[in-house]
Length: 332
Image 1: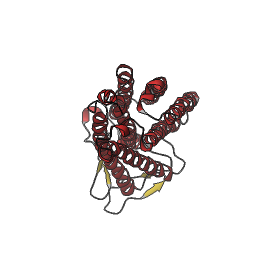
Image 2: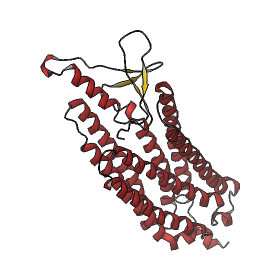
Image 3: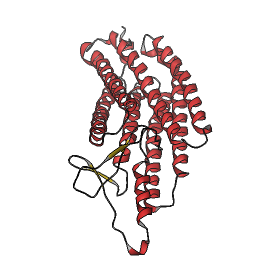
Image 4: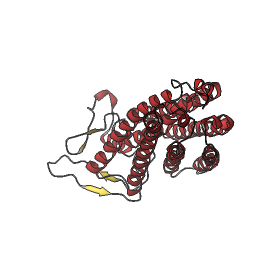
């Protein structure tokens, strides 16, 4: 390689940016490990969660771990194995291409799971919204497949300049779908307000969480688009793309664990089981016992999955009686 070609390579904003991206991605991968552990820990204690959701979490964790291994191999190949080998730095290693495919599968898989949550939440309502979201999810897979195919046609990093359009299209449609999913979930939650202050407060917090996580993934996708448009000849936008898949996995796992941490005055994690806390009655509220029981049941089942067990608390010292309602469906 000529000296002029060597001078064009700025390791700081190319492979240095990839190194920083892998470092931050490793932190996010650690968070997803913690959330996966919490998911199975809480489901084991409460004996809830269907086999489908357990398998989905395992599937997401395996893909997330594989994506992490691929991007680590990619950076190790360039910065360690081919240290000072300028010729190798211009070629695209196989792990870089494969990690992009895993990235697309992760993001698309999480969006499918969100669409499935919308379908469950709309049980007993009009199916127009979930069907519309499902159609959009299917259509968004087209640009993602085109992007993966375009990347596999590239052999050196300079070829990426010619396929910027595929990056814009894939990230743009993903951002659009994020907004659709977040707005759909917020709409369904807003129409589920019961008039009870505690339940409405819980739903409001859940809506805020959904908006924040949707904005976070959309913000990173838009940042990748902007950096790719402004600085197409460095790898800053590629390092940001390393983080997008991790953010999607963490956001979905956090939603699965949300009902154990967002319920206002309802559930807390004990040393061996979940106990339902009862708020102190105040005379000025004039709330009857039947209304309070209905409210607690509503809060408990807001995020229940199909096939979850419903635990009915008891005041005696004996073990609580557990009744399983296999056909019950509840929103988000």
